[in-house]
Length: 298
Image 1 (cartoon, rainbow, N blue to C red):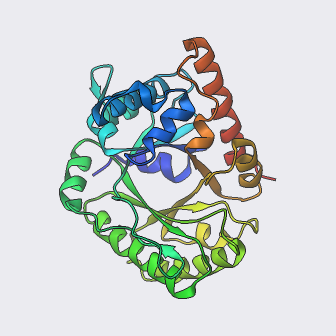
Image 2: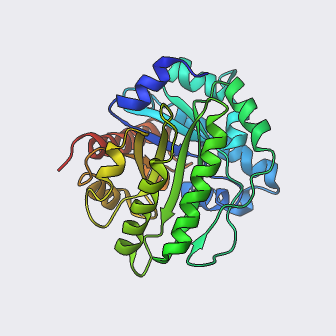
């Protein structure tokens, strides 16, 4: 069971979650944006070593602390890695004051009925047991929505909440992430359907248990206000979804009670070629901007 201090921080502390959970399929793109081409590594092990080095640079930067970054979502390989001789979850919490989360999904099925459901998560219980022993507070799992299909979106929500209940049995906090694509031909309608499906499922969550939600910043500001206020919700965080950091922060600032959980938008200005001083300054600017959008609302 996670310490109460972690729960207190995630429940109410000002700040945001850093998403450092790019996995196998998205790692080459993330490295490319960082300035490392695919020709720089010859196999998967070398690729992930470079990715871990980048994440280590982020996690050890002076600005990456719980004062503004209240939590961080990790890829499984990152959770199993080390920073300065400590396992990553322990380093984040003990040395930086950042609450660790773990991405647990195994990718997406092919699109059907306007959505991409999660693939079966084999070995989930074993992974959750290991994560809990390493001091991880919660998990995150992603599925995607492209079209405003009532049946497809209902299926997405049902799957997220069902697996969330399995995760909660291990004493971990599930972050449910049914992402609405920013390229959806009718994003506002899809989001309204998703809100309703989430509220239906929240009403079924047993008393005394909560979930978190990671949602696309809605086209209609404060669309998720009922979700944020629901007593079964610990916190609602926002994904950047392909928006630039400037656009994502501008939109996020219009949504009261919603904080960031950005990945690309957090790291977009960082480059492998930067000196430590340049890197740390760029990351500090990014953290300050995202913190402001998470805590100072229009």
